[in-house]
Length: 165
Length: 165
Image 1 (cartoon, one colour):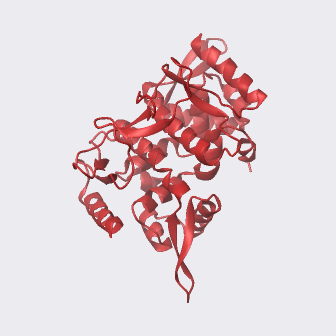
Image 2 (cartoon, each protein chain N blue to C red):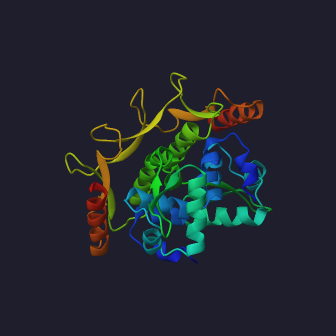
């Protein structure tokens, strides 16, 4: 309920969190990328209550991140498979992974991203596709985009000015 | 409470979500990057209940993502300021922003990342720092890292084999 106000905003972060802003959802996506597809597999991996898992899977299907693919007719059973929209979430997951390894793995990384070609450990970094430059402030900053409403424009204009002072 | 099992795992995504796996936390971080520092500013921006905001800010401080900096002695009042660990969350936020613009902005992007030098709109993309190649499956995949326990090694070995079949 309290999410409603955010869903109606234009902010793309708020809109994304409307779909995945609950950590079980992100853990399910993590497991889906690892190749899990079945209710029982997610449940075993996450040790999540079945009703909670049902709710989260339904939400991910509704939001177009996963889809149900029947693998048995009688009884009717489904695989839960990532859609292209769900697959596009992978950079977010790997950015979270990199941040976790950087700050919450004092014993060293337990899970890493590997270059399949060379077997080398990759170091995920967010860059601008055109220039290849690393995305970080103050070289880059957020701003109102082409579809921004007047309130969003004012908000970002004020904030950006504020952060420079 | 139900988070406990995940916190004790070695997974860097689970460990990160232990700190920010609640969407209010991410919205607070978003606003902090926009220059907001005060309780009232966050409350006004997010329209969040004060007790919830207090809880989230406390958690962010405990987890070392924000710190309290007094700006008034009597009465005692604090700014909430991002720490280096909090600042390192920015790529995650911008990856979420890019995904949101890609999938949940049918009218076009309302908030974008801008190259401060050129004023051009940046296109955030996650790459491997060493090779510059875009991080995506199957060219890259997750795997057990150097500090992985035996169960984590087995889990990733099995999963990776599974995803190839």
